[in-house]
Picture: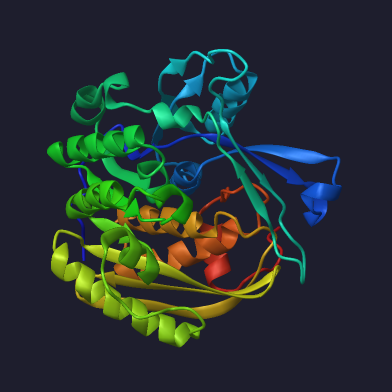
Length: 359
């Protein structure tokens, strides 16, 4: 199978996103008893884009920054270090109680103690994203983009970001770019906004080429009925996902690829990790395998990044899901939320179960 990938583009992947900060204690310690913490720049969408970027594909980030903020400077330096171009408005802080970049306070957990994440998003500058702040005709018509990736996190962040994502996707389709959408349902974002957000998500899905999400994401975001997933084993979840996707495909025939990851937590540092994908009419399943986890955040994003990389490389679908699975497993070995692959061989070594030293 091959997807119709636009040629002659400056960017392989473009992501609209709200950049934030992650604060993490050392050595898997809990936040409440730590006085040494590490600061990282992060967002779900740039986590995805990091796989193709570190492997040499050009990436662009559309976001917003707080003007003159030292954290904005920190984020820009981080994006540059990942090889990503970026653009976006510089928003005045508006005083100490004005705008800022979101903060995720998160420990990694250890052994029998699971990780905990505290989201602090008040005054988040990314909520102000607006299509009028970007020249979408230039970006898509002149510079050119092969794949736009967005998630339900940025699409549901605020009424403004929802409209912004729709404008980006419409411009992408106008100029022949492919669209990937990870539904990423978050109950706190959807509270009292179900009708508004469901309308936005349905339109994005109607324009998407790749949809990622588990069966609950599809049920809650698109209002579809499906089997209860709680407490089921992974084999039952695979069958439940297949059942759900056949319903989704009937409503969104434009979508070429559906995918999800499978995770069973044995303990914080030991998971069973798998994946399921439908590409056209063929199912691809990676049966859950044991992986060792340093920090679980970003594993799903790594999977999507590896999947998109495989599509952009023109590989066969079987290799898309394999590379995605391994990229997600790689991400869980980093304390950053995103994987930083040295090369393709490092990712394929994870797929092949080869952890021997490379000299």
